[in-house]
Image (cartoon, rainbow over all chains, first blue to last red):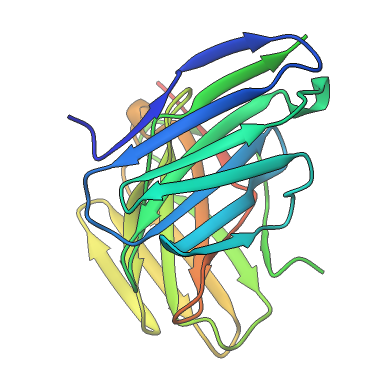
Length: 111
Length: 110
């Protein structure tokens, strides 16, 4: 099994729909992150969590929310999807200090 | 000014060339320096990790950090078509989150 598993891998949804992206990790790390990646813009941080009771906004949190259900699980929700949220979404986990381990990504298209 | 600046490329080189990828940063509190490689439709994977000035070598890859100039580099010797990917630098302050560069697209032509 992968260290960081994201579901779904691909998703097409309609404008205005609520959608949840899920992430689970087997690294045993406390820290988890959600990023979106757009061509030419690199990785931008949406939300991060340093432990189960700690949730923090990143640089582009508007229109998104998260839930940290357990040390191993961190989900990202789009309450009302809009087309400019079409992007590649990555979940990651890390120890401290240390490199991040990324999931394989969710390709989300909002039509 | 972004905390980490990285030329997005694309950078196209012939097979066997030496590749130099670079980033500059502005925050002198950064202590940990990393390079990630991302293949198309995949998540980034950690390639090199260092926390001190100087060079660190791993096979064909060398990471170089110059804290006085706030400049980091990744060198790839004898580049191969399989090295074609996006390379992201990432820098971290202790206890804080990573800051990523925008990524440089590298194409190695056979």
